[in-house]
Image 1: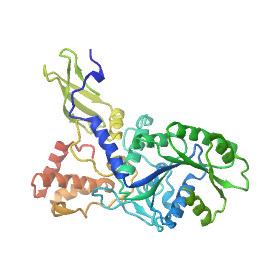
Image 2: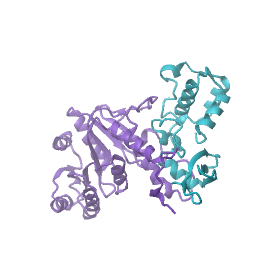
Image 3: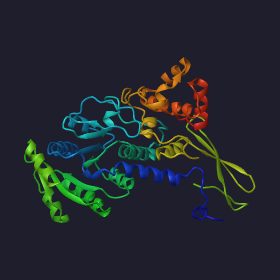
Image 4: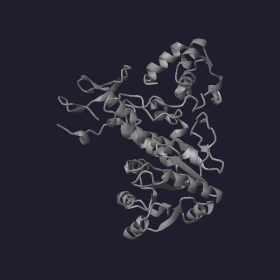
Length: 256
Length: 149
């Protein structure tokens, strides 16, 4: 009996063609985006969103065209960090117009779509939803990349949730590995988790542009950023104190 | 996924898709040689998995809409997240809706209404229909496979 790959007749469903069209849509949409950079960390609570938003604001103040895609679909915080005004998504014809921050940062986030205080819930069978939920979130990420009219950008920052799953989905959707900016805090626990994330990013072919050490000083003591920099040969591009000034972020922006 | 008629050693071709509305999906495939038809029936979990890939078995009947999966599948979307499509452009803006059709459209959740409205309007316009009525909406649902909307 013939097997799957032996059957080569075209089918009306054209599923491979539908998938190819999705990829093409993403590629076309991002054609005007010079750099796609994922802000990631293997550790939660280290300030990825905080770093992403303030870096984006600093870049915008420096005259760069910047977009932020809040890829933390279950815990979106970017709109608040960018001080986005109330926003209703305009009727989409071709692409969906992103929200615009007072500093001119273009943004899309699940927070703009969800009811206040509501978790991200999907329609569908609740039993064993783990089977399809990840795929549904990946679909949302794909649509955020491919359906938002990003226009011409110097850089599109993606605020990733903790862990590696969203990063791997991103690589698959983009068809290539994005640049990565990694965030840690100065603790050994964070260092260990971030090490895994950096290893995964490098293994997938990402260029890790730098390490940001956040929450430096006060209670947290340690050498996480320096340890990781030494181990991977990747520079520490910023050490963010508990109360950074705009100059702190500008200094980071000027390095990217 | 593909289907093989073992007796004829022929790849079966897609015939028809149905979404009965209970979360399941039925798709029929036919052997081009002997004419045998088989049905693939998926349970709600399997149907959901296909939907999450943003593909349609049997091929797309409607061009992909912006944020289509998000709008169709998010259950906790904000009512006023999207404009409702009242500012449609071009020929669609002149499309007339019967009172009954508008009443039915009003029952569609706001989160997805604009997209659904556009699909119905495109359907009617492409067929030279001057006014959208519940009957036209039924035809569109059936013909385009909009059962999930």
